[in-house]
Length: 120
Image 1 (cartoon, rainbow, N blue to C red):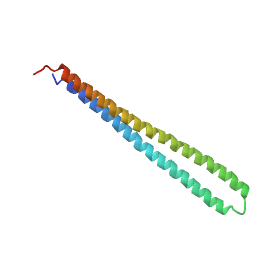
Image 2 (image 1 turned 60 degrees about the vertical axis):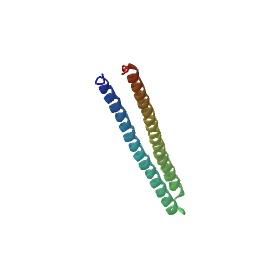
Image 3 (image 1 turned 180 degrees about the vertical axis):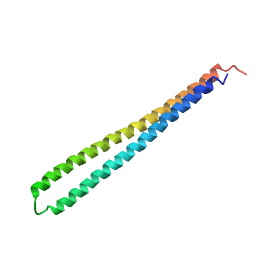
Image 4 (image 1 turned 90 degrees about the horizontal axis):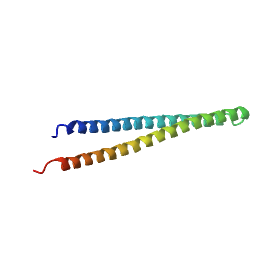
């Protein structure tokens, strides 16, 4: 009687492990993307501060244009980092939901086994 249920259990475990692996992998990739985007934004900010010091006395108009361009680049990078942050949060939420679904599936499967097994 237990042999037909084994493939169902193996399928549930493999599906759960696949979802968990995908969530963890995408979460780690998102974290890497967030860090790389924020590092690039900080680098741009550092370059902007260096330019500010060198243009303090002269070429104020050109510095203003460069500053606006740097702000646009930083905004793009930081908004991209925010998007990856949302992806990472989504992965965490999916992982929690998958764990809860796996727990519920296992509880129902064990309860149905108890109900369908004859009393010994």
